Image 1 (cartoon, one colour):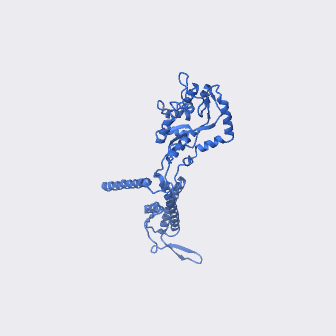
Image 2: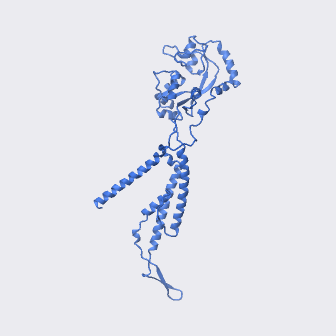
Image 3: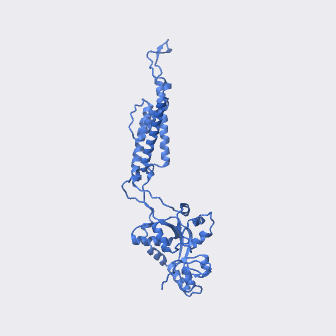
Length: 392
């Protein structure tokens, strides 16, 4: 006959020396043995345990995060290193174009010399002022001018700007920059579409350190081996830091209450991984949805699961024989896999490869840049008005 205790817990030692939960029922003779429970030093000394059934590890679960729009998706087509290289290349082209244009402009305003023979092999160079080509003073031609800046940037942004570059090497530089800008713009557009369509998934935590730093409320069974380990751990350690996030002291301690709050997103549940997998499997079997997120990394990887007996119980040796036979023949592993047969879909990485229509949130990043540009232009316009009104 299968019996349950009132608080639906494994049990913990009370102040008067007695035990609560299923361990207390066995200790009082109300039950012959418990279901598989975690073994620790306190439980080991109060009764007898069977052969090890399963070695589990602790993990944490939370409400499964939903996909959302990526506001910064417009910068994702290129890696940060590529963006830095594009910026450096932009500055290099701007400087090269400006220097070459300035040099060619300076050479163009020099007077055209004429020569005349003077003797057999000698010749004398004289300046022909009439035929010299007079142009504006080179000192009035800045090395970096606004036309060069506007053309270099607009070419990269695929915007048309009228420009007739000088002949020679300057025209070669402009041609190469136009070709490179075309390649960069084409690659960016193709990657941008894929980056915006694929949604973004933000995981709340993926290891114990991130869980502690997240500051989310954590539910832990107050009679578990984990709770005692957390309570006595160094406050400066990761395990000790978890103690400040446990919030269910003085509240219901049964696993049903903890699992309900997990599915509703009220708190994080930290229990042995197999227990979390059972909750996920049961919920998916009933609803057909994966509503629970399980972090990848685990901790306290030597959580031993055994049956608990009263001292001198005649059932211990019989169960030990059965457990050894079933474990060595692989029957226990078969039972484990069969109990979690519906959980495969929920253990896949949280991502979506399916295409989706773009939403307004996908353009928030681009709109913010546009509004920022309008704000800067408006401020510059006010400065021009102020300068004109002061007459400076």
